[in-house]
Image 1 (cartoon, rainbow, N blue to C red):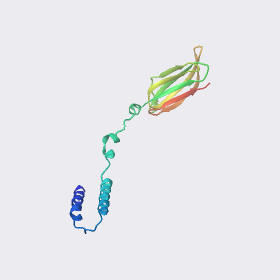
Image 2 (image 1 turned 180 degrees about the vertical axis):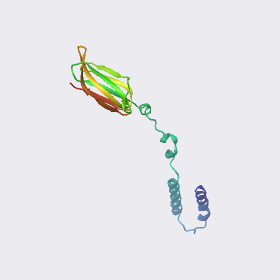
Image 3 (image 1 turned 90 degrees about the vertical axis):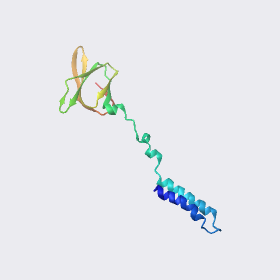
Image 4 (image 1 turned 30 degrees about the horizontal axis):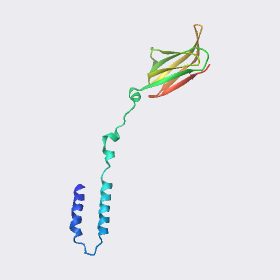
Length: 150
């Protein structure tokens, strides 16, 4: 391709002297402009080839596959939240527990993304009553807020 363009650039002065004397210089300039536009179209853009343009810095949370979750207590009781990570069909024995005061919000950061079983219990005078129990799924980089209602 470069050889063809080099040949065209060399051939223009050779053939331009063979043109009749009454030819207009503007036609020659228009031909040169057309050639330059053709080169611009054929030549690849530098920004498309540069490695800096194609590199994207991924978030560390997507690499680590972690997420954050917050629990907002909208009751007037102390709530204890227990969470267990699910691996396949079983839950890990390691418990993540959190004590949330009335009208307060507590958070767990950098949890492994995946499915968790959670249990919310009210803690009144040393006796625990289960308010809600279920599963929740945390996606990487998610910042979930779960409301606790009485």
